[in-house]
Image (tube, rainbow, N blue to C red; front, side, top):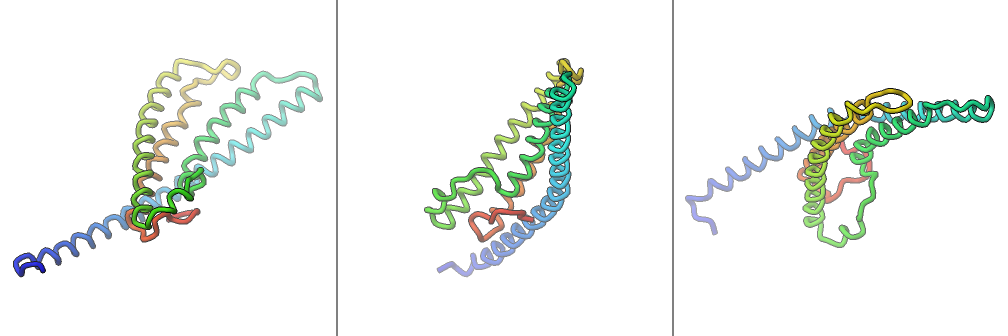
Length: 194
């Protein structure tokens, strides 16, 4: 039994817990809306890169087999578009939990442990994305002096998608941590969590 002098701590704790939950939900809502808009642009960019890549490859096939005169630039442009498409699709896939997961292993734990594992995984990924963001900035700076051979484009421009993608992945990882801290479910269902 708690002494009378300490009973007021229960009220303070309930108020603090309510404030913490309210703050998490507010941050989750704002971050969710920002991520919705940014990831919509990512999906548009991914689809645009894929469509451009298909058109360029078809152009190369026609030039090679119909006109017997292959073009020099389509293969390099296709590789660049593939890099951009991959990095633009990664934040969307991570947010919607489309990456490979070990759910059968995690489901053997109690619900509370599942939730802690989920938070831990997203915190580890957040740290990884922060390191990769820093390294990708260095890679972009180093790539500014290198030119692509057939299209004469700075490789810094090709690598510029990497820091942007890792910044978006950091934002999505923070959103996942907030979702896991606020949710009663151990692991949110696949699909949009906002």
